[in-house]
Amino acid sequence: MNDLISQYIPEIYQLPLIIGVIIALTIITASVVSRLFKVLVVKYREQNDESGLTSMLFLRRSIVVLIYIAGFSFAIYMIPQFRVIAGSLLAGAGLLAVAVGFASQQALSNIIGGLFIVIFKPYKITDRIQVRTDLVGVVEDINLRHTVIRNFENKRIIIPNSVISNEVLINSNYEDDKICKWIDLSISYDSDIDLAKEIMAQEVLSHKYSIDVRSEDDIEAGVPRVPVRVVMLSDFSVNLRAWAWADDPPKAFELGCDLLESIKKEFDAQGIEIPFPYRTIVQKSDLTRDKKDREERASS
Image (cartoon, rainbow, N blue to C red; front, side, top):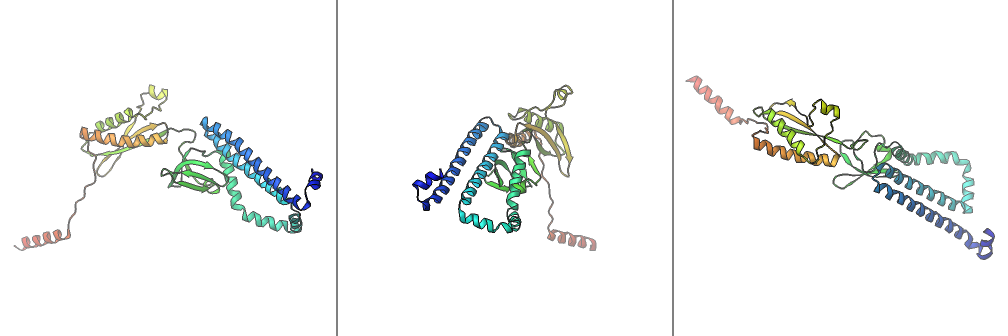
């Protein structure tokens, strides 16, 4: 091969040609590998296998990056001048390694964090998670550097893997997608508690997204499908709570919104009052006038 190149190609063009071939092969190899993984990604999407999809996407990016690093490194190594420089720097390799280690510490921690996420799967693509108190959305992508979360305003939240892997998060889809939605409403002390509880239970039972999560033993024991209980006696209201179950978080959200509306309408129809706090406002001028009237009555 080298003899053939030396015979037909002038020496001045040999090195650029070799480097060009190496770069071209690197790009072609990375493209072929990426396309092969895309076939697997489509397969996992069709099967709704979020766990396999997450692994394939992460593995595809990792292998493609490694191919590019290996290919371009080999191309650079083919340049004789770079070999000389590398040899002269060999004595300072220890110091260089320390410097590179400090410079790439954050990048490596992100890669390792992403690897741990893919292996242990605290969340996967399409999972609905909450990070801290205000970062809520659906996991859209997990790559070598960061995790992409799409919130419910269609904005993307990009969190480095090293950060999110050390955070306490809430995963609504971990192992079980079913969600219990609390339906909290308050009624006045004058209202009929039993009637209010019955209305709340019936509205939950009649909703299209309400499901029964009782076991056979619970059903035999007579456990109600929709428990409704008094959870607090506040200053001006009796607080009631109904437990409603749905198949997944989106349905649970719609279930909760619909029930608040339908229960409010049924309360109005049945004469159940939803109270609000009353406040008595006294103006300072009224207090002054009352004091003056008392003084005049006392003097007379």
